[in-house]
Image (cartoon, rainbow, N blue to C red; front, side, top):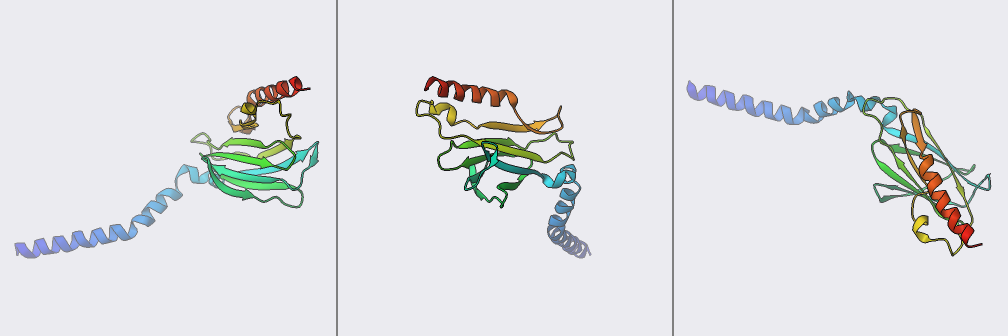
Length: 180
């Protein structure tokens, strides 16, 4: 009789193990569905971008997207010269924008948001291209992103750092002025 109980217990344990294995993905999936981050705007940051030259829409430009420094590919633009992206939250991206005869621009976008945030606005990204820099411009500063974008809790959305933008533009303008 002791052997039957042991055999029944083993069968029950084996049956429960198989059930646990078969249902584990479902339970894990259900746990993920109720995670507070799932309520965030689709787990991504919508980015609406446009590239301008002297205030007018640019054409024939290329945008490459990098995530955590790995190239994901080229981003297509529409007939109006705009591009659309959906960037995963809690990641780091770089947009690399190029057009022949113009200085390359990079935009760093940090999509980290506060852990309890479930609603946030789309990010509107406008990039203005300038003619190629003078050969006297120190390449050191042209290798940095043109803008750094992060979630700003005070403003309640994704914005570029004015301090960083001003600093980079001042450095580039200083070198360009020195060459004239």
